[in-house]
Image 1 (tube, helix red, strand yellow):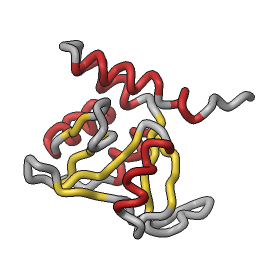
Image 2 (cartoon, rainbow, N blue to C red; image 1 turned 90 degrees about the vertical axis):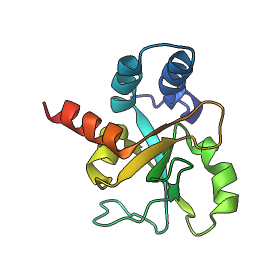
Image 3 (tube, helix red, strand yellow; image 1 turned 180 degrees about the horizontal axis):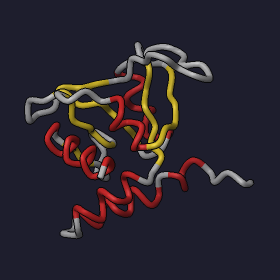
Image 4 (spheres, rainbow, N blue to C red; image 1 turned 90 degrees about the horizontal axis):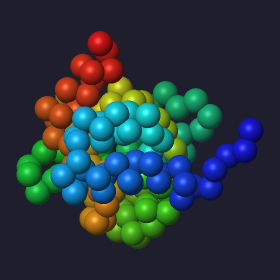
Length: 133
């Protein structure tokens, strides 16, 4: 099996983000997000089968905490300079992110980038319910 280059792994999600930013369907964005792989920055090396992780989180301008994810590993570069305590990155499925994020957390996708979005905690809860139905 051929693995696509890292830039291509985030292309579909980035296209869905752009479409939503231009008035497209948030349901379409949610569907693409759930089927995507994203990159999380971690404080420690997760190893092959992590039991506990410490991912990068931020406080959003809207006042909630959010788990930070990126569409590609390349998008981590700015954050790796600003958050050197998170030197590791791991590509994971977006549905995995929803399973590990606490109820009080949202998700910030590509924070600080033009192609990104934030999902508040109630949006994360709706996505979790959608997955479990």
